[in-house]
Length: 250
Length: 66
Image 1 (tube, each protein chain N blue to C red):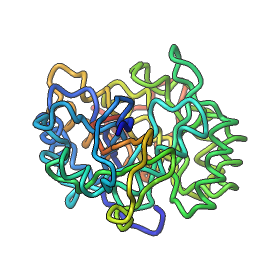
Image 2: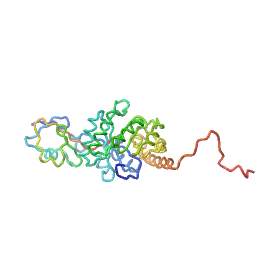
Image 3: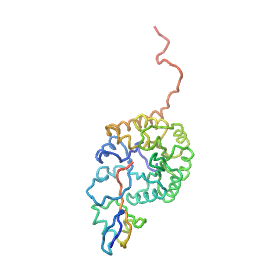
Image 4: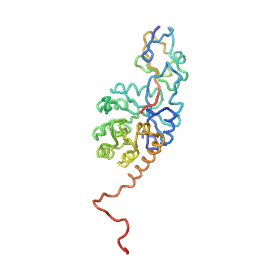
């Protein structure tokens, strides 16, 4: 992706965890190489607050700055320009949201922001609706990865529209990652079985009763789903088909 | 003189540059990005950027997020 090779197909967020230590343990258990991060004001009133980078080492993990909380292309652009200054790299995740209730992507703003970011030399992974037409538009605009939602952010509802995810995967020439909506391991596996190149999640791990165990489950689910996709599933039949030979039956 | 730092009023001496302001407030300035009046001040420009009355500054960094 964006000229770089990653071995893990799982990306996790760094929000909603009990603390950064738990977050770091989850990243370890999930075996991830990329974590998403937010850009926020430095806490100047309490400089002793724990810092993400003290727990999740930016030398070990690729920090993927995200524009969560941005509702216009302008806000997202401002955030990612600051992110590039803060981090010094150009691989970023763009999301431009429409409303607080659904956090559904605003695709007009998203497409506009993608065009500007690509022109400014960013490598842009784009959070988007599961609309194959918009996915193509984003790719044409230069997105380095297409990231359709499986379901609304933080909802844990699973892959609501597998048909569209599959259509996006089939048409795309850049990596496709399901971003948002996965609630448990089987849903991550479903995303991968649809042919996605990866999965991005935060809440499914952070809000599990045991986040570290769920992180590990997600690692296995993504590996299993990928293998199942590559192996090619058997055909579906209407009736039983015995596994033991009928010949030689006593 | 008064500037606005992360949305709050902040008193500084006239002639203060960005480097001085940052080091008085942040223990480790690595990973901090600064915007002055909506324009990014790159780290290489911190020394030569002298702040002016009423400047709107934003200090940001990476934090946990989805």
